[in-house]
Length: 355
Image: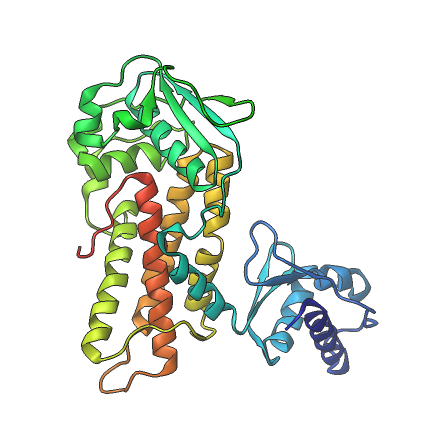
């Protein structure tokens, strides 16, 4: 469905609501449909409810709630959500197949830039463990977006950081050597709030997560809570969701079927997971733009929560034979696992096959 066709679909929904006596307004000549903005979801969004609110004498959110079921019942529309003050966010049929196919085709490089930008960013940070880990990860994220990046530590990095936390000397420099990327480099100072305690007792994965998940202006909590395997630990949820995606593939193979990109259905859990995959490249770009690995870490938590809510409908129950929908849901779960693995890799954290 093209944007022009979708605009006509929105106007037909308004007319049906008017004919049913639910809205007392004139049907507008056109309805704007655009890609959803920040906080939106799905393929397109329309502000028609805000447009009609004043003539209808109703709040925009109420108008949107009236129009929502009329749009849901339209051929080609799989989901309609209301966001913000009353925007209608529309997910079209076939979106899942294209998105999942793209993720599986690109693998862990999904969300990466297609070519170098020609930019060079030089990241300068103090000789402190959180700053060193942050510099390493920001450089990786920038490179994923086609930006050449080098890190410079104000002093020789502590060898103990490499031993446990994986802060490799190859990722750092102290100013020696020439930058080969053309154009004027951009010098950026990274000064996250220092870690109050040594993160090495947590080990590599939990230690890095403890330093990277909080926003740079927040002091990281270096506690054993990052090691606990329970729902309240975001790192556990992310790694467990990845392991579950791999387990679903193994279990499906045991049942004799594999994932195939297709239409996974229009359930709320399915839509939330598609939204998480769809917005992953934007989260990665924002993490690069703001030099903020926490944006990537938080998006991985969102994706993991969507996987864990979605996973129960992937495999056929009992003796039910696998259907095309099961194959499509499995492909969606596998795509989510790919995104989680790619994001964890950028953070320097292991993505386990079993947990």
